[in-house]
Image 1 (cartoon, rainbow, N blue to C red):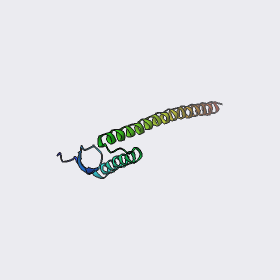
Image 2 (spheres, helix red, strand yellow):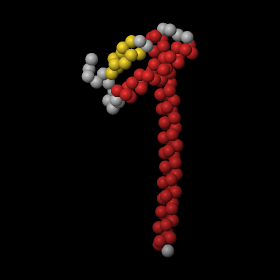
Image 3 (cartoon, rainbow, N blue to C red):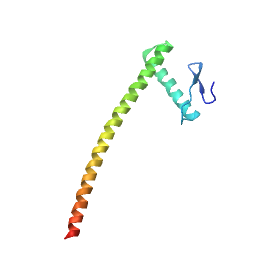
Image 4 (cartoon, one colour):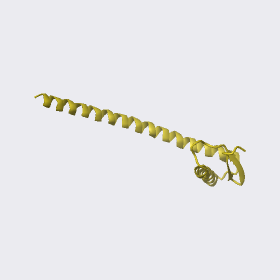
Length: 104
């Protein structure tokens, strides 16, 4: 095991997770806890006991969440860009008006 790998118990099994730059053991533990919670939720809802199928469904659920977050992020970025363009245009007009007044 590498020094910075992270070990955690998931569904009764000790699993070694590769380290992730910038994340502490506490943060990695939180991520593993989210995975466990997701698996429990799917298991309870769908009454599945096959561990590999549960893992695939949990990965799928996380991928859907990530996709939705990316979509929202893109939408927000576009809205922010539009708003900034509008503000720049207003500021330019205001500065042009102020310069014209100064010339009088």
